[in-house]
Length: 80
Image (cartoon, rainbow, N blue to C red; front, top):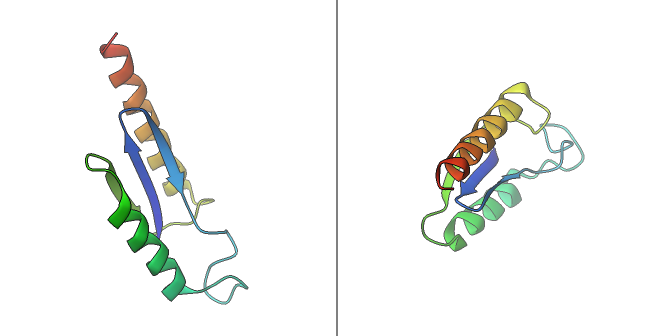
């Protein structure tokens, strides 16, 4: 599970190490879930969370991150 989250001031992509896949040295699903639960629980109100089941190197992850960044740029331009 990977997270992409954004708010009005910018976009942040959060991920676990690329070597966290099944059978990889950093694979720890319990720790991953605890981290993601803590992030979501402690975000300021108004910060949206989008969860993707893709690694940071997957094209789907990159596409979503770009999509969200472009939306933030459009929103920033329209507020000028």
